[in-house]
Amino acid sequence: MAAIELDGMTKRFEDVTAVDDLSLTVEEGEVFGFLGPNGAGKSTTINVILDFVRPTEGTVTVLGHDAREESVAVRERTGVLPEGFGVYDRLTGRAHVEFAIESKAVDVDPDAVLERVGLADAADRQAGGYSKGMRQRLALAMALVGDPDLLILDEPSSGLDPAGAKEMREIVLEEAERGTTVFFSSHILEQVEAVCDRVGILREGELVAVDSIDGLREASDADASLRVAVADPVDDDVLAAIRDLEGVDSVARDGDALSVVCDSDAKTGVVTELESRGVSVTDFTTEEASLEDLFLAYTEDEDGADLAGGEPTAAGAGAESTADAGSTDDAEPTADAGPTDDAESTVDTEAGR
Image (cartoon, rainbow, N blue to C red):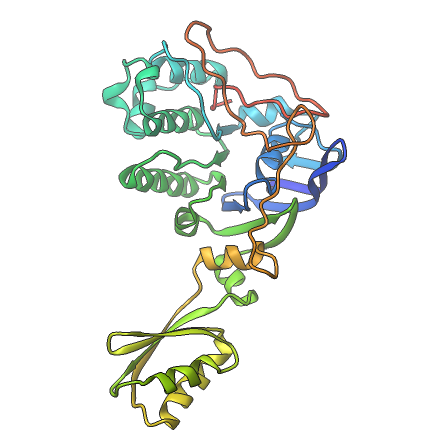
């Protein structure tokens, strides 16, 4: 059974289409990376999956439930780390996790959860004094409460130092090993490449690619980098000849080697051209296009401009909602705002719900 299934999902805000005819299946147990420029429709899609926003058209099924008609059943089995997570300043880290435990009605040791995300020593500190990275760890702790079947992580490494990002990746892989489905949206493409089984790329509200990273690499025209070790000096005329070859974007000296950015079909031609001009090639290696290269290949227009539009806000047409949780000094956490057909509601602080 698919963990998430979107069929023809469209979301419009007045005359602006935030997501257009999106059909996507995320299989149970996979780590799925959901990518796109700012304003591509990622947060709108996440809010639709969680029934914080109602789709204009199409169907959304999550963990076998209709996301609209059975949203409570979905949230009981889902952990959410929203982008821009806000804490309740006067509540301790433990109190936040205890609230998530109470909301899920599960028997969990809050200290064990805080230990897992590296916050055991700060459990009794007021969260208002937490750094951004600590707040992110707290949000992850709340999302992990109750061993959810589905984790939705929106920019989970935001604010984390390299050690924290590594720990986050390890937790994601541990959850996947346990059988959890992880839906992972991030602009930190190295994180995505390290943990995701497949990725989907959204551009201007439309799904333009979905595959494994190797599959995307094979299907795209993103250039590879060819490093050619040479035994002889290479003069400017030879460099110009290489640069003029079809499929070559650039060439530069790099010590005793040449660094050539070219498409895969041009690699043999580069070596042949060098040898024909009396340059002895001693070795060559190819560095495949990175996920960043693939991302740009799928999301830039023909002139190389990044296609980052704006998603509509609840008030009409404007910027994308961030699924942020409001922070207050005195108020206790409240229940989620109900879903709406025409405006994006915000994800409330209880990231575990």
